[in-house]
Image (cartoon, rainbow, N blue to C red; front, side):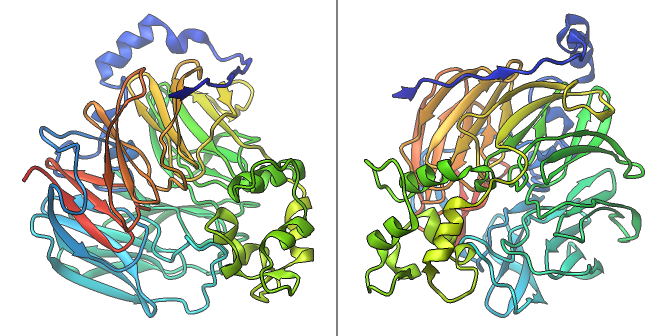
Length: 511
């Protein structure tokens, strides 16, 4: 059963409609740039999954044979218990790389992808003062990347480290560090021998470009007035040329890869963002949802939904105390809350660190002013310079937006998942919904959807890995269960799917 999709507002703009003309379509075919741009992949071999969301950061892979039904037992070729962490696996040839952490240290693992055995492990000191304000935050969230000669791992409070394929450290970069309430999420990306890193960290924000071989800084572009962003940079190989696209603090910016100079900017976007951009040669899509833009009236409704308090139209601090203060001390301890987004963000509300949400803190949460910017997803046309908010915004939508998982482009369709289990398919050219459907798996969706052939693989935090059919009709082909839960985006290599759960790594393939 599907929900009726909401309206999408086309945005007036002066960009030439030639973006969609047949002449440019023929040119794009000649250049091999149509569709989901799988031809742009930095490494065409199906053995490589070199960075976050795979080749080109497009979340697209190829497999001649891959089971659609699997779990921690069925079609699991091997399983390896791993350190905690939310980063995704990356793969080059027969070697898989993964980051993690324990109570004392951070680590980078090299794993034999065929056998599931650890080839080597390198450790780094962990900052002892990291006090995250969300239960799902962790110090090993950024995904590493590799070019087959070196592997590059980034930890927000430690720095950026390069190792060769045998585990020898080649170089590292350290940065001035500040505590981050929700940790670090942005992953480094590689392109033509250069490594790009976005560090938006409340007062020390900058975009870096390094020589991947030596670690020498090629350029550094300050990003003033940028608060923490969890999006990763995206190399957009557009009709207008190749650019580095970076999101954060209500803006989306395009930078020159050669010198880091800003080319264009789009404003009035989400200020506190997790999803990363994705694109075809003609159209780039970016956006999402954050609680920072919820007005006080909507905050009450959001909590009613989150806490499953159906029948209520409004919620006050006194209501919350009456509902959840079990010991009568006029405060709410974490253990008094049901599983919910409010419980996950308990320390964010508990500003005085008393280990209880007091009435004043609850009132502040319910009545705070929404941040500048807005919850929205936009499509941007290529070829702009300067402020292109009005001139190159092709369409926008405010319906059913993703919170963490980045969107996916397959052919001429855009797919994305919303917290709570709503899956959307939009027409990429117009932004008009094709369908919006319930996945019947509630909770968070942290893992990005990936396309493999005619299917989309989507992991839910609760541990269900859904397989959906691509196309205009919503169809769930399989529901595969991993009881530990899934935060990380899966990786693909040579007809094998690698699924990282909260406690381990699974290799999925035909038995």
